[in-house]
Amino acid sequence: MMITVLGLGFVGLTTALGFSKKGFKVYGIDVNQERVAKIKNYEVPFYEPHLDEALREELGQNFIVDASLHEAVNDSKAIIICVGTPGNPDGSANLTYLLSAVKDVFEASEGDFKVIVTKSTVPPSTVSRKVKPYVDQLNQQYNKPIGLASNPEFLREGYAWDDFMNPDRVVIGVEDERSKEVLNQIYLPFNAPVHYVTYNSAEFIKYLSNTLLSTLISFSNEMSMIAEHIGDIDVPSAFKILHQDKRWTGAPANMASYVFPGCGYGGYCLPKDTAALASIAKENGFEAKILEGNLRINDEIMDFMANKIAAAVPNKEATIGILGLAFKSGSDDVRLSPSKFIIEKLLAKGYSRIVAYDPMANEVFDKEFKLPIAYADSLESLVEQADELVLLTSWAEFKQNKELITSKRLFDFRYAFAELPKPPVAAESVA
Ligand SMILES: NC(=O)c1ccc[n+]([C@@H]2O[C@H](COP(=O)([O-])OP(=O)(O)OC[C@H]3O[C@@H](n4cnc5c(N)ncnc54)[C@H](O)[C@@H]3O)[C@@H](O)[C@H]2O)c1
Figure 1 (cartoon, rainbow, N blue to C red):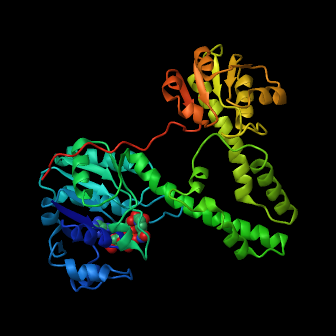
Figure 2: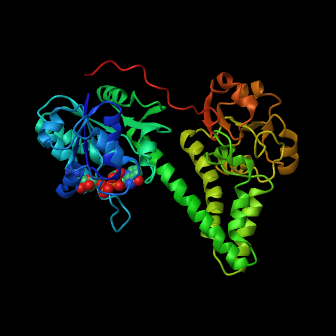
Figure 3: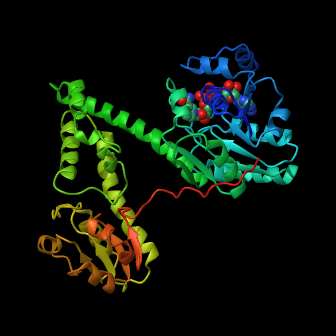
């Protein structure tokens, strides 16, 4: 199967040479003729380890750069767009190059089915709200069937070759079977998990990755500024000692359980310690924006969850079954537990029939908060009494009783039953 790559920058040249190395015939196209001339001359136009060697091996073999766009597009099943998506002054992504590359493909295409694959990084909803409608409009205008897939790239500059050839995971946003089959074929030679998701999810996963990294960097920088304001703190050593926490190691590292959404943190330590550091930073003349934002988000997520129930359950007489009262599983600590706040919010919204069950914390919760709710003495009894179920603590007992719990409508606010998307069934040949 033939592939065309549009845009031969860091991502495009790596992609083109990578697929070529995996045995596909790949056409490389770039509007920058100076860049193309260099590549034709076996020169990589930027510094990136290993690409020069791959270029030497592949150019004139599987990798072709002297074809016209017309020839390349009509000889290919997949056209991978790797053009730049620079930021506009207001922070939004500039889609000019991307949309113009899409149009170039339609103009060049003679009509056989092919798939445009966007590899350029674009924010979630760009493909579904901007690129797909544009492709649909061009499909009608030119009467040429062209599919669409979104395939974000996770490679790191400096490690681009290895990251591309040995990806941790491949993410493909695709919403029609014909396009999915083409993508399935081109990623077959990569020994990596391939996840087929919606367009929006594919883009979101890319931003989840990059914004986690930028947030961690800003968190660390904010902490370094707090430390400097307080004084007498050896900042780099403090971070290196932080890295000795064994939650950083393992595959997956235990730290991953903190990078997972839920309905907020509670308990004795995280809420008060986060608030106390933000407060002492202020006392020392520094406003800790990430920590204060972090505290605000912990309130907001609980409102968000209570509002979700209110929007879905108009009947205030419905019996709401709460699964879990402890602030986390494996503990009977209910101090500042999200369950307490969410139940209070539901009571305030007028839900008067609330019944709760926790494998360890029923009594301590009742004693501590004296809320006007009932308690069930077993999971079975709770499920039987409830019209709606709300899971707020990820107890093993709940995870082991998925069938029972999902026999009623469930608001799984800890995502206790979440699974990875299922791999697709083997694709038929589309050659
Ligand atoms: N650089 C990275 O590490 C990295 C990693 C992952 C994703 N991305 C994303 O991938 C995309 C490309 O990044 P890059 O660093 O390779 O960009 P780049 O600017 O190095 O390369 C883009 C290339 O596209 C060419 N181009 C523009 N319009 C074209 C058209 N209509 N037809 C053919 N070629 C055209 C340009 O001449 C340029 O050579 C961006 O969306 C970026 O955010 C980059």
